[in-house]
Amino acid sequence: MPTRVETTAPEGVDYGWVMQTTFVLTIVLGAPVVTGLSTFATLPTWASRAEFAIRVGAVVWFLTATSVFLYARAYR
Image 1 (cartoon, rainbow, N blue to C red):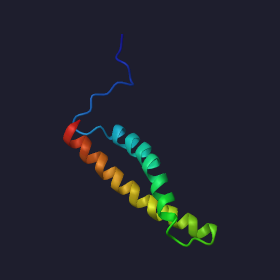
Image 2 (spheres, one colour):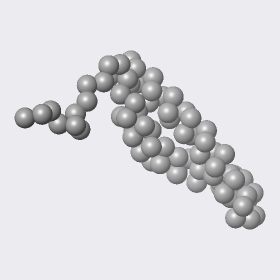
Image 3 (cartoon, helix red, strand yellow):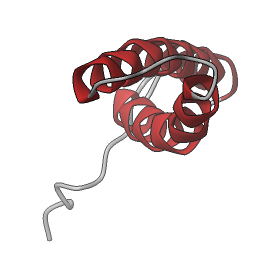
């Protein structure tokens, strides 16, 4: 019987795990951060609200991705 295609044996960092974990944590952590920070900003139009969410979300994503990668490199 051939080996299953779904199994992997990554050497070093498992980038699939890093990407999935980053996606989930960015949503879980990013939504409250954007909501909390938006209470202190004046956002009169939908365009300004979307721009604000994108800018803050990008920072949250970058910090989350970096943290998850460093965790995976050190402990996994």
